[in-house]
Image (cartoon, rainbow, N blue to C red):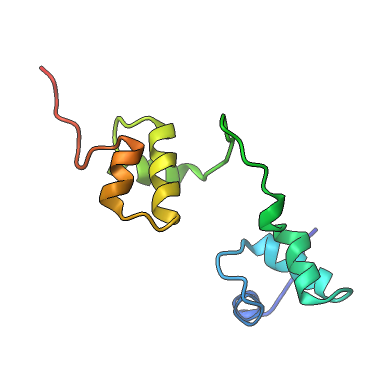
Length: 115
């Protein structure tokens, strides 16, 4: 589906609907659902409820754009993705970064070259 919108329409809709961080397609989906249901229901339909998250103690698949993964790799070369994800989740949960590094087993700085 494609639609033409005026410049700034997506930003205004995201701001007014408190959809910070939403993708363009999520904003459009929310806006269309908002035509037929209250904002809370539309928000839940697009983003789900926190209680709907299925916690797992195993593999979690996610897709990141290549350029974002390259940026992360540039800042944390040689560190396994699982360790980086644990670090990111800990920081996002409000754990101070130094403590999060211990939890995720991620050392500060670039690894030393071994000769």
